[in-house]
Length: 192
Image (cartoon, rainbow, N blue to C red; front, side, top):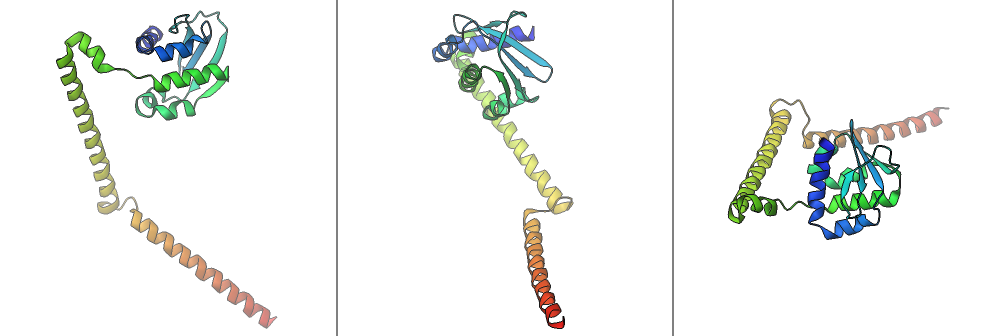
């Protein structure tokens, strides 16, 4: 069920991107398997460059194990998603899939305009973007406030200037100790 929904979403995106389907056509008929956490998504590339449910008996051309936080990375840091993947099988197919998924974009406004009309879709997307920016700003402000509280008020975490001062003091102590050891060596040589 989840596999069909995921494949449906990816195929919806692929339908609007000729370049992506053309790249996938080279591998038509081949099966790939994506593994992340306990989830497994197996699919076969069709003659149209779309993804279809894989036959369980089909030989897998490439198996890609994504980190357990793959869904979160897909939304927040897509570039790091495939750099942490473990690949076994066809490197060419894995690279093509990585390129397609890295560069595939969803035109949300276009899809919303089909349902709601152009103006409502644009306004809804502007509202969603505004809410997302507000949420990101609020999260950033909370993080800065928490960091300031923990470093200044509670002193539970050392501040950057305090750490830098400590490092300077440690370096000075190390240099003083090295000079003292050399003096001791010279004194020992004079005595012995």
